[in-house]
Length: 79
Image (cartoon, rainbow, N blue to C red; front, side):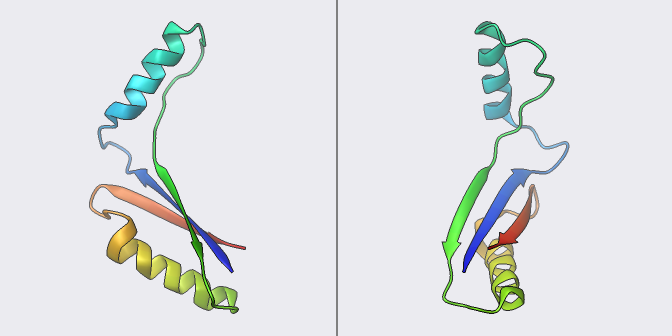
């Protein structure tokens, strides 16, 4: 199974990379972009065949290593 872990800064946490991208988009003429937030997607190829167990394992990995849960949130999608 594949697990996709999306990690994003929590609301209220400064995102300088997102601000820089937003500024660059504006300078390139892309108007109407109100805010840009950057994050990361980690793709895990898991040997587990039970979707519930795969999700639980990916969530534990995210809590322990993949996300800094003090300043980041994460979501897990298993396919």
